Amino acid sequence: MRRLAREEGLTVVEVVVAGMILTVGGLGVLGMVDASTRNTFRAEQSQLVNNVLQQQIEEIRDLPYEDVGLTTLPANEAGENNPNSRVGGTAFYVKRNGTELKPMIAGGVVAAGPESFQIEDVKGSIYRYVVWDNCREGLCTEDDYLKRAIVIAKLDSTASGGANRRYQEIQAQIVDPEALPDENPGPAPGGGPVAHWPLWLTDTTCFQASRKELEGDHLAHNTRGVCATGLRTGNEPGAPDLLWPEAPPLTEESPVYDYATDVEPPASPDHDKGLQLMKGSDCGAMPAMEIATTGDADGAMFKRLHKWVTPEVPEGITDLALTGNGRLSLWTQSIEGAVTFASICIWVFVREGGEDTALVRPLESLPYTAHSETTWPSSGWTEIAVPLELQAPGGGEAEIALPPGSRIGLALSVDNDSDNGIQILYDEPSFDSRLSLDTTGTLPEWSPPEP
Image (cartoon, rainbow, N blue to C red):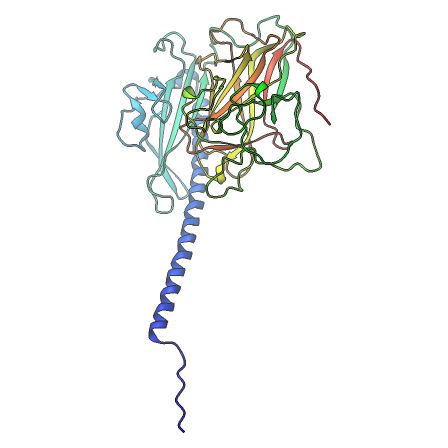
């Protein structure tokens, strides 16, 4: 009997299907490589632009004060990504969201631009603006002692960098070295020796008498209420966290915990540590001085605003006062390592008699300090330091009295002009975020931490 011939190998259809599968898979790999290349190039672009901006702002700082002004005033130009769209007549909107319109300064040596620049493969244009940063009654004719320089870099569109990238900017205040504000926020003569008072941010609620040992990852504390309420999470207002005058203790192991497990980044929820703050409203619209008794309407304000307070000043201390000078040091980084612009809002306040009263910036009479970073730290925990100049609302005495029963407070949020929220790490010996204030008088001696 004749055997049938064996048929082996691939049919034409099978070869075509295999080829299609190989092609599709190869396209996917090429897409991943292309996306990775784009992200790397964008990060390099941002760093180079940041260096250019820093150099430009330092050159303006080095000018004589009378020369810090524009040679000619720029005109308004349409376009969402055009810096000149923030020009309003002879004034300029200092904030990207179209607020804080301030008059521009002419008669100086600073060219407005745009001026082309190129560093390696990065090309773009530089825009410069100089405005009065302290204008009484809308005019700047009597107290011309504070200017603000804004330098913006707009990149040319590239295939690898992405079309029409959002421009980057940096701002700096420039003070007339021969002029002083009407009311000096420093201590008055004869106010006694100045002591440096560091207050560390902790993860302990102010319901406790002292800092407690960290207990691990947990839901975000709702800190919008009073200390007596104790620890609360979710939309129920509870005790602020504690400001404590001793650094975090050194231990053999200091794990980094997540203080807001309910505020997780969408792509990599295990990446975040410390406190994550979601982007909030404009600084002036945030209810930072409101002591909440009920939950807020959308149930998320506690994720956007966080507060800390000290224990009460003891009854026996009657001479404690702030000079108005201070500094906030925060260990921070962006969410998921993203290269983004971010701006934070900082309130330093006094809690007394069931009310929070914000200390104001003497030159602008604003109840908060705003700090921006064109590129927020993204490659690891980084310390940023923000100088603080404060005075009591309405001016008055140079020193800010802290009577018995009062508390010093700190509130933080992320301004809505930011690209995204941020992370803050504290209560850890290597990342000791703290508020430092200069004082006169007797510093409190609260109970030491439990062993």
